[in-house]
Image 1 (tube, rainbow, N blue to C red):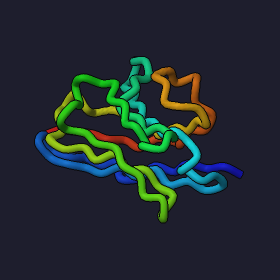
Image 2: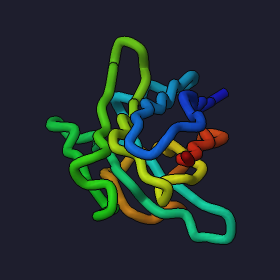
Image 3: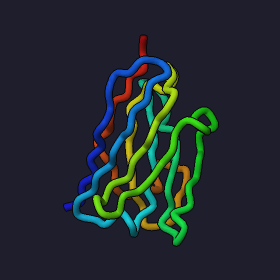
Length: 125
């Protein structure tokens, strides 16, 4: 059974940092492209960052609002992908999801096969 489990969501003040983890069981993430999406109440799911399953693990940054603040990385030994979020702003308040697909990164949520349950990030003073 395949499972993606996000963790690391929390309440943080503006300017703070969080690191979200996406830990997998039942699949080896090295073979998958892994994307982080986010979704606020009443909003469509938005693609944030993706690390592709090519030889270079090419990173795709889909959200202009997070450029220079968010990064994505893999830890193959832990079968985990991370989303490091720095200088968090109130507008970053959302539920963050990781998702996996066997093909290269693609910025459409219906292109992904496996999803985690979501991690809630709240940025507030």
